[in-house]
Image 1 (cartoon, helix red, strand yellow):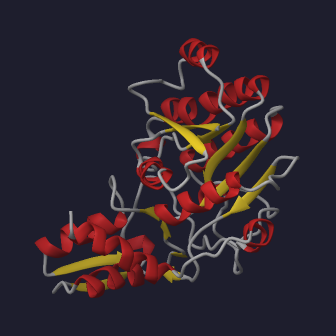
Image 2: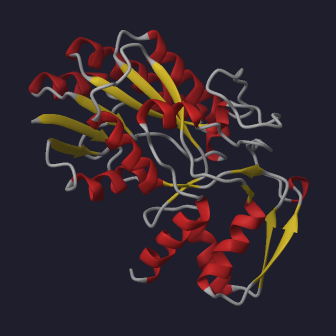
Image 3: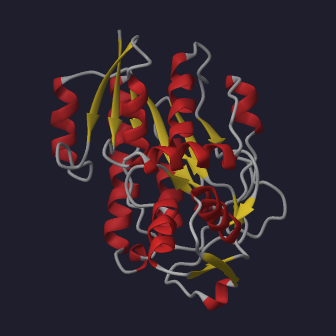
Length: 288
């Protein structure tokens, strides 16, 4: 039985992997979060891996507070870059296959067609830069690894756009949401299943690879919010605004649609349409 370590296990993606783990009896899963192992503590990480061996490590641990990262650059770099660099080096020595999660924020958002894995990167924020440096650390390591970039992640767990809109739409009659940022929502449960299907195959790449994963389709944050409210039957009016009318510390990509052809071809993964997955999550949230 192969052993799988999931870091950042209490976050959205880690929680979804935990939920799905019972469907993969050929794997023995260990779930850890910062309260069990601080990945920025290199000595603690060395001690942890000295006690046990894993066949796979799915690294869901990350600093994801995009705006706070502008003020907490050192912390963002420590979690998203330094910890990943040290982790990849250890996993290389352990012969553990690494699945590392990255983001659409490594791009500048100026494309007019879905981003390929090979397209030039140019992050516009501290968060995006820290995640790009994490990618570079993995690619420069000797670890066997894949990097999966994703976008607009949400689930029934944690804090995310879907849950925020649901809460605000119950409290207010009107909400304003930016309409000039375009991308694709990603249900963390769909990404979790894709990762588990990938490591279940016998054709994992022998060389390090980058893959893109999001749900199918394209939308704006405004249309995403409209869909959340409409599907939930809430009586709240959503009004479109421009990015300039909603200033944030960190710059957001205006276009972050990801081309997913590579991951679908290499692993025969079927990806649900974003609105279908939204309905799934809304049913879960409603029944919580």
